[in-house]
Image (cartoon, helix red, strand yellow):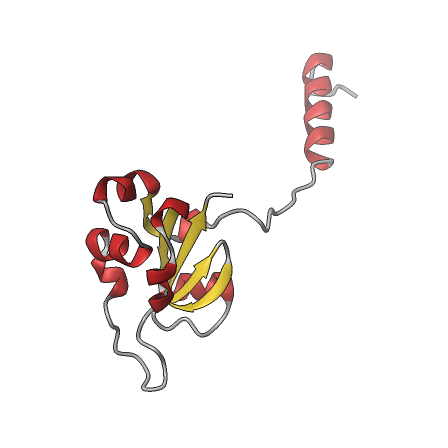
Length: 132
């Protein structure tokens, strides 16, 4: 019986199927979730401002991130704050983060913050990535 593939085409097909079949995929859980963030604030932008803390930088560059949101009566109306992925409380803590330590500041909408960190983000989240 005649096979439609030439020996060269068959060898290529066999190589590809073997290579694709043995590929394993892993998820890097330490990767920074930049694909969900609204346009981040970079260290270069912060350096141009002459501010001393993260609150001032956000207030000048992206003030809508700090806007009070009317949600439930029990919830604080500021976004939750994360520094290098660790929850620090609400955005009020931004006043204690000095700008010389900041590499990037990101804002996540409520749905995206819930995807990343679980429930209790009715006002979104701000994440600060610091230099090591």
